[in-house]
Image (cartoon, rainbow, N blue to C red; front, side, top):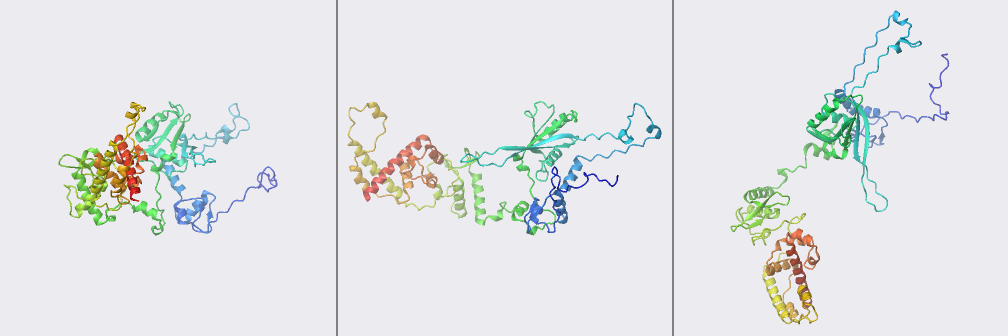
Length: 521
């Protein structure tokens, strides 16, 4: 009988149709030393060596780590789990039966049953609660065919394990459920709160839909106290975590023991030493001097009536007549530069271009977002305001003479239509053509500045301080009439009525400018 060998014990020779030959197992050979990049971020492929090395099992990875002098992560995990769920001690073997008991033949024993089967110890009950851990994450978005919109969808994966919940803390519980998905080395729970998780169990009120969100130790303690009152053999615990909400709890990768800091990448230096954190030494002496003056100006001129762009306390220069002139970062910088040069003090406004147009006592509106620095355009001649005023005065005189000579409407036209219609531009330009042709034209590139100055002189509304934001958007006088009212309100902060009046003025101003341009040509 010993010479007969069962075919079950023989390896498959490949001739059995029901059992195809098993693929050969690659031998564990790792003659090359693992690369340092692979030691920092373990993977199935080590592309840092030539040729790339492939790992097929966890045992091969552990052997490579041990050969490099690095403790395998699974060993650290086993040490942590051993503290959370200690391994139960094996029960003592049963005492041998006496011959008198072995020879007993009665109804208490079945024939053909051995003593070891009869008195075998009962299976050890599982220590801990059965926990289902569901991990939600955003699946990689796949672009639909054609020009459809890419929509990312949520996916989830659920794994199961037993966890001892007696006297467990919130931090230990989160570490244990992260270990179920092999994420304990990538994420760590917050010391006081977080991450947000949902916990429910069999028989809990509300079920999954009414599961409470647990963040703090107090909330976890209440849920655990209610859970431990249930029979753990009849209760199944479910936990749900969202991976997209755990970026704030990700463990930063640090250099492993045995890897020299000289070969570390620059990103490791940033994480370890914060090389990109702003420091005082990174700024020039002049910038530090200006910063000190800006702090003094902010202490001197806080304003409770006007707030900043984000709702914080604003800053205004208050004139002796209690009028406010808003101070923005550009004006702070210009004022600090004047103080550093000894041309101004913190008690009076400096005589610089940043405050031109703001001396009428009106607090300017907020600047548009994303505008940085003044517009570096050619300097306007000092005589331009005077020339523009003279030009507009002569134009208005010519327009008044044209209006006096305008023919009246026919009697067939209804009075209501005449009252509601907008006055049309004069068709007869015999008087204005001569007057416009004799007037000097604004310099090329300064049309917007001249238009804003004329609008302030004739209408009494000063929008000259908004020249830079308007120019950055390429809003010239010929384009402003076609700009949306909301856009102009965002840039200038003016009311709807002023915006409409400004657009009409720009249209008339540019028409007169074209007439003057054609007359000169």
